[in-house]
Length: 278
Image (cartoon, rainbow, N blue to C red; front, side, top):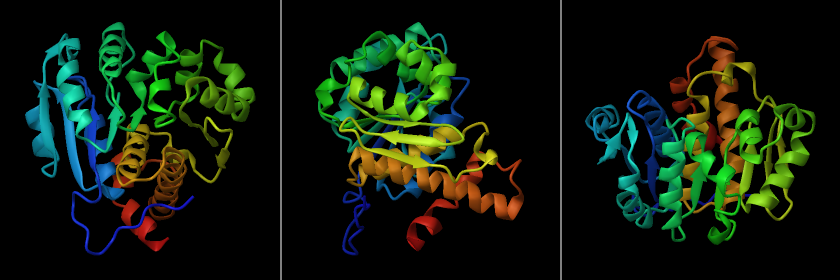
C-alpha cells in the first residue's frame, strides 16, 4: 500500500493534526518521543496532552507542539480529564492513546471513559491504554476498522487473556485472529513483527535488528504510525509503513553506531531521509 503524497502547495493543516495522550508524571519522555516521531513521519500539527505537572516541561522539550495540561491524580491523568481529551480528539486527524501510561485500573478507567465518548477519529491504542480491550474486546467496533493496536507479545497476551508462550509459538495466527476479534489493525511487535487487518490481510516485517529492543522504541513506532495516519493513510497502510520505517531507522543506526547501544531518540532523525528516499 502506498503512502499519501505531500502536495507541494500544501500547508501544515493539509498534513494532519496529531493528538497524543499519555505520559504519567514519571514517564513524560514517552509522549515526547512519540510526538517527535509523528512530526518526523510528516504530520503537520502536534498536540501532546499529559499530566498538568509535567505539561510545561513537555512543551519546552518539544517547542513544535501544543502542550495540553490535563487534570491528574496519583501521578497519572485523571478520569475527570476524559471530556477534555475527547474535545481535542474530535478536532484531530489521528490520536495516539497510552504512550507513557502503565497498565493500571485508573488508566484503564480513563481510557474507557474517553472511548465511551469517541466519535470517528482514527486512533492508535498502545501501552497502558490496551487494558481497555482486556475489559471490553468490542470497544473499538464503532470505529469501523479505523483503529490500530501496537502490542508486544506480553501486552497481547494480557489483552486476549492467553499465555504469552502461545503467542510466541504462532504470532501470525494470533495477530490475524486478534485483528478480526477486536476490529482493529494489529501490529504484533517482536523480532519479527506481524501486521494484520480485520479483513484478513497479513504482512510480516523480519528485517529489524536487536538494537530496537531498547527503552522508548515502542513509543517511537507508535508515533510514526500515528503521524502517517494523520496524513491520511489507512490504518493498514500506516501500520505497515510505520513498522518498516521504524525497522529501517534501526538498521541505519546499526550500520553507523553498532547493533547494540543506540537510543530510541536517535531513531527519530533517521526517518525523514528513509521516507524521502522511497
